[in-house]
Image 1 (cartoon, rainbow, N blue to C red):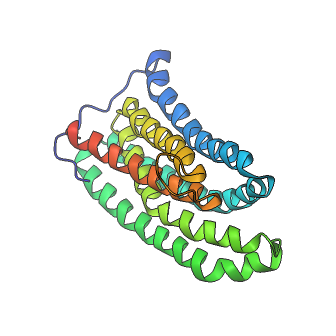
Image 2 (image 1 turned 30 degrees about the vertical axis):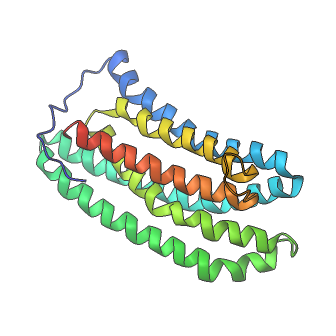
Length: 224
């Protein structure tokens, strides 16, 4: 993701309309991931009670890494704001490139922790009967972490460049993909295999990839 065109003037007027035009898309974008988690719970609840319980435990585990990404996102926005205030938007592409590098490194660390350290922890606290399912789910689900972090970095750039109205495009694409694939992969509709509990993990990973690609396309098409 490169900034290929000059960024417009980032000075804003302090009024309700300006504040809402920036804040509302951000607020709505925060709701979409929660909708994804709720969607997984609804479909898995119809699959079995045990699957619903497992989804809650694995969802909290993944949420820990998602919150870490939000922290990186907030830090990135602070850096963007600092340079925007100094009318130095040329530094945006450098900041974005560095944040992408850091986010990928953190995501790889999260994957390694989940694959090689988490099993020793969960095995001691999880239900022995549910542990194998939960661990298999997490090993699939965590593979979406790099795309989640990159998605968050791109969204931070859109907010900083006063293009928060584009946020909803990526989030809607992600939510729609997750809902569709949950239906297809959990139950095995549309000629696809019924993957059950793991189907929700695969659906979520593909949805995060889709959201990232759509966000990347938005940045490219708008010349940002």
